[in-house]
Image (cartoon, rainbow, N blue to C red):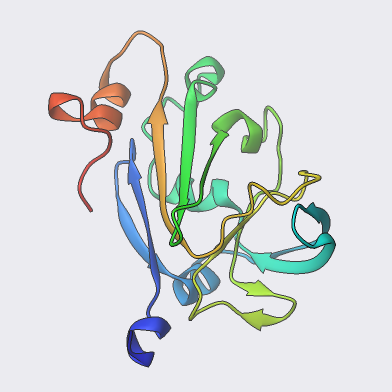
Amino acid sequence: MTHKRVAERHMAVVGAVDRPVELSVAELRARWPQRTAAVTFDCATSGPRAHTFTGPLLREVITAAGPGFDAARRKDRSRFLLEITGEDGHATVLSWAEIDEDFGDSPVLLATTLDGARLDGLGAQLVVPSDRCGARYISGVTQVRLRACGGAGGEADRLAYGEGGAIGRPV
């Protein structure tokens, strides 16, 4: 991998969104307010870890992409999931309700810096400050996919599952 390609790491926001998008770490830094989270979590391999992360709220990035739910209906919002995947294949799932201001209001970040160092060459990192272990911290985020679960179907499910049952839309 060349230095130029490393400097241009991107992540895709896809699935049940009106405006799928690819974003670099620099764009995440420039387009949204940056929040800071000082966290301590237990790492299974190296014990307690303390770090300071800075980046936009995941909910603000997804909101800008136009999530495929009726924002005025709490029950509609609460049936959506976020699948986050990293470059190494590590993946996790969050519910929209965890990050929604009317429900859990968890300040989940797409970190653009780690302990003051920019993550441009490594990719954004998912940070879940409320977690006591680091298992849902995803390094080098490559994709965030919003999808509906259950419910009565409709436009959001068509966006989430697409034609023929495939999840998401191509970027």
